[in-house]
Length: 129
Image (spheres, rainbow, N blue to C red):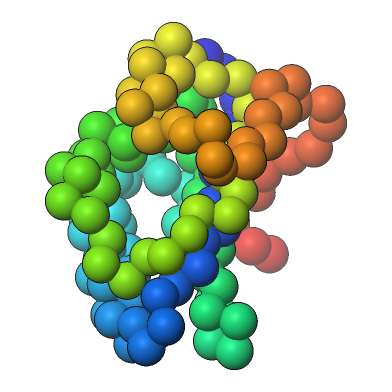
């Protein structure tokens, strides 16, 4: 599959677990940075007052996202003690068959999903001027 693939995930944090989430996400980011050199961008944003966290990932292609899912699957299956509710998962770009297969076990009818497979227009800069 060609073209940039973007994932945006939105979760809530359990009451009293914001500091746990901060620590876990910082450690997770370090792991991803070391083990996924193809990943273009990997960021978490938090609103402590509402206990919401968002992850924004920009991959060079769907295969990069599939690699990400393979690497973190054990971490996800062990459970995330601080996470409360998954509010929305968003996928932008064409999913490869491999990625669709890896995402299937994590899908839930209780979690809204937005999937826009066709990239209409735009660009990604690899460096900032």
